[in-house]
Image (tube, rainbow, N blue to C red):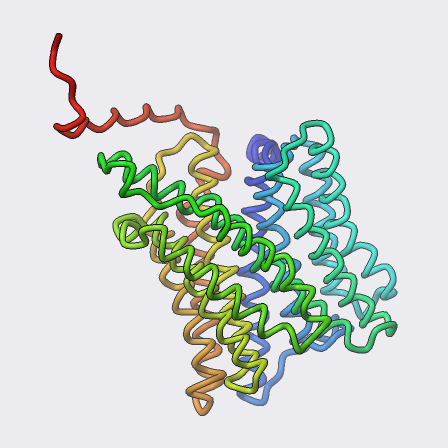
Amino acid sequence: MANVVKRVLSEGFRAFFLGAAIWAILSGLIWEVWLSGQATGTASDLSGLSMAPHLWHAHEMVFGYAGAAVAGFFLTAVASGRGLVIGMLAALWLAGRIALWQSAALPPVLVAAVDLSFLAVLAVRIGVQLVKRPKAQHAIFLIFLGTLFAANLAVHLDWLGLWPDGARVGLRIGLLALCGLIVVLGGRVTPGFIRNAMNRAGHPPEALPPVTPRLDRTAILTSIALPWSVLLPPFTPIIALVLAILHGLRISLWRPHWSLRDPLLWSLFAAQGLLVVGLALFALAGWGIGDEVGALHVLGLGGVGGMTLAVMSRATLGHTGRAPIVPRPVAVGYGLMILSALTRWLASDLLYGWYDALVLIAGAAWIGAFALFLVGMIPALTQARTARPAPPPPPPLPPHMKTAPS
């Protein structure tokens, strides 16, 4: 057992991807029980919370679950860490979850300080690493991490009685910051994975996804602006719709049909496709068309949940030396995440008469997706690295590129 703990704390993705998945299940179960009680008139006792249950639920999805998933990615791709560093950050994250759960018994200032310390220390860790080893392409991650911290601060300012609208504003800024991060990360990894797959199949360069620097820069700048537009409500739906169009165009250029043969690829496209749909629905809701809560859940469940599940899977396989072949249970989990997002949207927008049942189905699908992730990925997350498989041989050259023997 001691060896397993030591191994889990040896790399950021191990500790935080495990923590994210476990908390997604536990917090999801708590929310399901509470919703079931509301539907049947036997409400569960959540007296340990100092805030309304729905605010705790939203906070723990944006800053609890997603905060851990983002930390696992940052501590692997941007700033490495070992043992003590990973353990300290994991302890801070866990302390935040406990402080929120028992917030009614603790001073609000202490709850805020404990919860906010995790993102603050993570940002310092990444900032120090970037100073030591500057990488311009990673600096943008600090922008999104700073936005997440500011969003969480706004929520706590509300709970401290200092900003009456802070929770509503902060939760939306935090969720949209995660969406912006997906736009940036998706643009970096998705076309590259498709190019690799097409190269292995021997496709000529002109058939590969094109490089579109202007479109990419415009999408990135828009994704940075979107969270802060919440402070200027008239502009929020405009920016959301612009980003939906820009990122939708990018996805269409990445040869999405090539993803259908590989769950590790189609899960990336599915999540980003739901992100685009969610942004469009969010924009329409801002103009009074459709339900904003339904749109936010498409973004949160389909976009953020789907993308983090896909990235956690691929990163875990890659960084433990395993072949990029997703276990079958995890692939089923990708499908459950899509079901969760669509069912939750239907509950708010089209089938409100079935609201209670559909919301519970959406929650069960969310829990099932992460349970299957753990079933498929616990061996990789807790066991030693395997020998990295040999790369496949290069594809044969097309006949017109072969040279005649001299």
